[in-house]
Length: 445
Image (cartoon, rainbow, N blue to C red; front, side, top):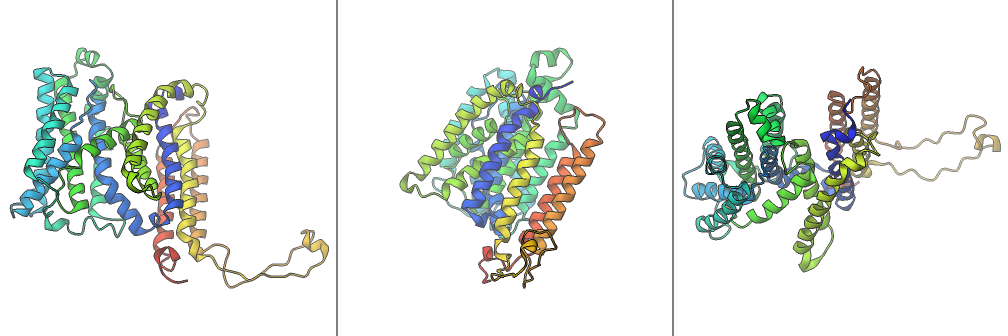
């Protein structure tokens, strides 16, 4: 039987705990995050980092220590090319924009793969060369930030609502990876990441699989560049370096093995969101002129600590094998969503005047039916009551399904976990959207 300590999912425990702590802190420090505009803005800002981390994740799973340091400059390169063509009036169609962005990302990654496979240059050398080359090319194409994004992107980066084209891109990219994991190519990719020689002797066409991994990474970079263009509505050739550092940190924080064979969008997503939350929490503090320095310093510290914790996970797993990462996600998710519900609906509580109840001593100690106090409102709002009942129903459903599971030693909850989280998220969105009178939105009570 597979133990928890040997399960790849054990590496998700660190980013799950960290993201829960950061999300709870972010909601408390910045309550505006729990609103349609707050969540929408968070999605817009975090999407480029998430997609860049996805691109690095695909290459890391392929093995050989392939970490494309040029992912940030490549994203900026696609951004400035799209903006340059749009400003010149040569690019206005959404289909043409996606073709250019995805095509540039795939062409670069194809060139990267061919050099590694046939010229036999170490991936780190190719990545560093691409980083330096693209950084200079970006400044040649667009010496300073400016230009105009395609017109159809005008409303993409507003972040006034939760549902936006950027969210759709992010969801499609994530679901696309999960569909890819059901294919034989993915199994060959992981096998090659663990041991390329053994995969080759087993009949796996390692060269084609590696090229396929690079093409998928190019698609993710192209989508990230589109989201980044929508975010800033212009071109910026200078942000690639910071994007690379942040994406690599998120990759390691998500438990993805840089040596290959282990990783997925779940860890990459958790790591990227955690990195964005760190920046959000730090922004709530006023460090003055050293704000950027503090952010970069925290990123570096977290990168080192993440590497150390990743090495200690197998050792720690022997003593806490009874703790499943998905169980921790379930429990911490309930706690964090409870905090978010409280912050989102705190303005709906009714203020009751102090009631003085005269009753015999026996009634005061509940030996008889106690007196009931009536008021103009309820202790909790109807939306909160609905969210509470939905959460309790989901918990009961998961527990019953878990107890009736034939595989008593299974460590994952499969479909039940996702149904539970979906119910809680629906309850959260209902609590946010249906309460326009809350003080959180600036309306008077």
